Amino acid sequence: MSDSSAMNAELTLTDQVYSGDPLQDRETDQYRNEYVTTFVEKWDELIDWRARAESEGQFFIDVLRARGKDTVLDVAAGTGFHSVRLTEAGFNVTSADGSAAMLAKAFDNGQARGLILKTVQADWRWLNRDIQGKYDAIICLGNSFTHLYEEQDRRRALAEFYAALKHDGVLIIDQRNYDTMLDEGFSTKHKYYYCGDQVTAEPSHIDEGLVRMVYSFPDGAEYTLNMCPIRKNYVRRLLSEAGFQRVRTYGDFQETYAENDPDFFVHVAEKS
Ligand code: SAM
Image (tube, rainbow, N blue to C red):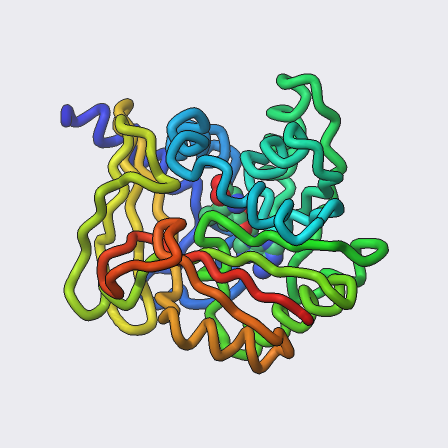
């Protein structure tokens, strides 16, 4: 990298706000400092909608249809990938996110496809203050739940999700396979979710309390996300303790898998 492109990347990086030692930034509110407009603008390059749609196929649509669900609250809408897909598949979707920049991009992405997304800015910890009514299903996808650092915030968010669901509602949460990352180190086939082949996504730091991911773009820009590496069985336990009666966990969208193999887990938690 030339001096000037290194400097540009550095300048872009500083758009995100971290403290003097970013490895100490381990708070639930940190996401507000990370999804800055310039990163949001690049997010779709990172996730590559077409490749992502191909790799996840009909999975979420099938899970929802099999249970006869119609109204869906996408609580981590991001730039709208799942909100758009599910709206196009005929579901009645509301798109929520704590980041105004993300929601604005989601709205634009919907509009570009001839859709008017219903958007609500809402932090999960106060979700029911900002949304109305109860939903058949809530989705929290793209490894979003990992932004919560304190256990009480995780419990609180799950209680809010639970309360926003109808009596027979279903919550779908996904997460990176942090167990393997913590126990065996990082490796990814880059197959699911972060599919853009021009973008590299790698951890610069891993410990039991923090995974710091670095996303490097072909133009030299770099962005980071600090995430809390939650283990699979811990999340399953939190879901049960939040009151969900049944929790089924898929590995890379498959029902059966070798424990350390999948990149991602998807938990499907049912209220009744
Ligand atoms: N679901 C999208 C996707 O898969 O492309 C976005 C995933 S992005 C990794 C995580 C999203 O969660 C961001 O849009 C961020 O603003 C949102 N988020 C993180 N913590 C949140 C919180 N406490 N309340 C509401 N939204 C939050």
